[in-house]
Length: 498
Image (cartoon, rainbow, N blue to C red; front, side):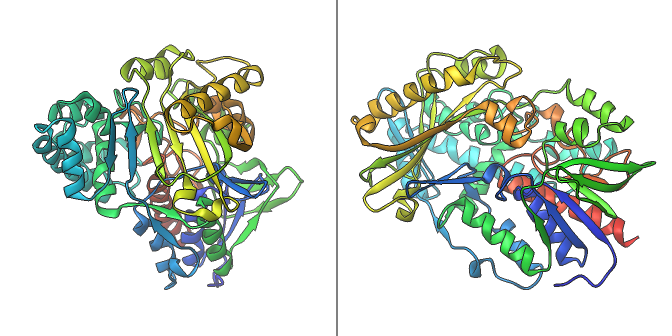
C-alpha cells in the first residue's frame, strides 16, 4: 500500500518492535521511515556469517506466531509467503549437574511422564499451575498485553483482575505453591530469564509464558531469526515504507512540546508529524532528546530504576553433528537462587553459572556447512553498573570456562572440533545497541516497573513522541515488543487522524 495521505512518521531503530510498528503505520496509510544505525536491521536480532556458519544474535525462541502473522494480515498478505516457521520439540531440554534431564513440551502425555519421573505428586500440581497460568495469560496478555497504560487510572482499573492471581508474588513463589520438586520449580520458573527477569522477584504475571507456549508452541524461522527480520523488512518495503540503514539517529529536534525533526549522523534531517523510538529507553531520552527539559528530566528518573542484567554469549561452529542435542537446552549449575542473587543483586561474577545452549542446526542444518554445527552458549551476567570489569581481559577467560562446561557435559572434545568462535559481552550491548549499562533487556520486569510504571507508549510531555520495544509496556521478548507496537500504533494512528 502506497500511502495516499499526507501524514509522515519516523521510527528510530529497526528491531522487532520498531519494524512491527512501522508495518502497522504503513498499513494504515501513514508514510513511514525507519532509521537504523547498524548495517543490518534487527536490533538485538542481528546476525553474523563466518566461514559458512550463520550466527543469530537472538532472540532464538519464537512464541505466539499469530502476533507476527497479524502484521501481514493487516494488508491481506500471508507471512508464509515470506518466511517458513518450523516447529521445535522439545521446547527445551533441562539438564542438571547430577545428570538429571527433563524435556519440556506441550505434548501432554510426554510432559506428564517426564514430571512423574521426577516427582509423581507434581503431576496434579502442574495441572493446577497450568490453570493458574491460563488465568494470568487471559488477563495479562490477551486483555492488557497490547493496551497502553497512559495514566495511573488505567493501572487501577486493571489491578483487581490481576490481584486475584496474586501477581505481587514472584513467578518462583507461585510455581512453588503448586510444585514440590526443586528441579521442577526451576524448570517452570526459568522462563523469566528470557525476558530479563529474576524468577525470584519478577511478577507472577509472567507465568503466562507457559500458557503462551502450550497453545502456540515454540518455533524457529528457517535460515534463522534473521530470516524472520528479513521477511518483516520485505513486507514493510512492499507496503511502500522506507528503511534507512547505517545512519544512526543522533537528535530528535523539538519545537515547544512537539517533536519536529529527526537528524542522523550523516547530517540527514527530515520533518515528521510523529516520531517513535525503538532505541534503548535511556538513549532515547538522555541522548536523542538531549537539550530538552523532558529528555534530561526523564533520563534522571530512569537512572533511579532497575535495569535487567546483561549477557555473555559464546558463538561457535563445530566440526560434526549432534542429533542428540536438542535445539534449546538449559544446563543448570549447582545453584539457582544464590546464582540469581549474584547476578541481580550482588554484582559479582561467580565461579558457577547456568547456560542456555542454542543448537539450531539440529532443526535447520542450513545454518552451518555440511557436516558441521552452529551453536551459541549464553550466560546471564550482571550489567556494567553492578559488575565493572574489563571485558577485554575477562572475555576470553569466561569464554573458555563456558566451552569447558559444555564439553564436560555434552561434547568432550569440543575444543578440538571448533572451526570458528567469538563472544559477545556487556560492553558490546552498550556499544552496538546504546544499551544503558549494557543491559540486554532494558528495564527489569518487576511489578513496580510494569504497565504504567514502565516507559509510556506515548510520552507524557512531548505530544507526538512515542516509545516501542522492551523499555515500554508490555516489555521484552518477541511477543512483548510486537504487543508494544500494537499499543503504540493505535495511539499514533488515532493521533495522526485527529
